[in-house]
Length: 235
Picture 1: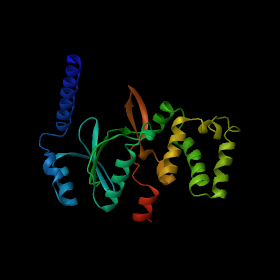
Picture 2: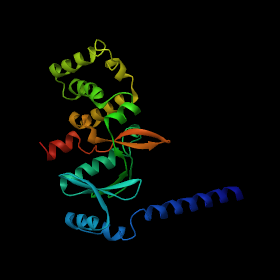
Picture 3: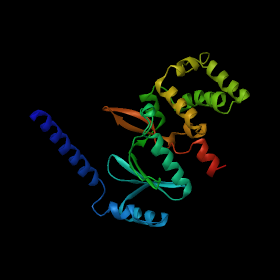
Picture 4: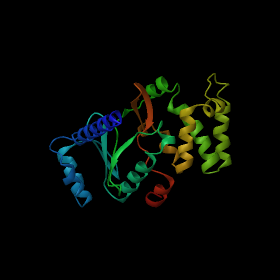
């Protein structure tokens, strides 16, 4: 019984330490409670601009560095809310854990989400880590997109022929190769599950490099644009 109590006390102390460290991740000038209570998009953006370093911005969201492990994605409008909500939902899905940047804390309404910090992925990163480039992978992704998602036989056949011709051109990146590759098949499963536009999955800017088990890994860092979000806000 004593050992059990000691173990539970140790676990409790470790959890308190983890939580205290998480609270200290932000710069000392950043008041998390004040930030969470801000009412408007403009107020939240203004507060982050004053206290955090901006690293990227789009039409719907702005990303800020929290520390050397996390970024804060802040919604600027309803489009940003929808994309944050998508990343909050799918970022916690265990099946896609290996290909998606991890999410940590978040706002229940999607106002902001804390995500794993990644460095930009390059062609060389893909080749070194996965063994092929994104251009190679994109042919497979597009084939599966038009075969499964949009069901466009003509376009699907075009990309299938490109995969079939891979052998003739002296490389191994054909349909059989990608159909057995864990990253490629999980990425396609994510595309099918979310109806994500294939174009976003074929851009280097959608991917980053993170450390997993002391090894570099390629992950999606921008995966908020599903078919539903696109149809509601962008079409």
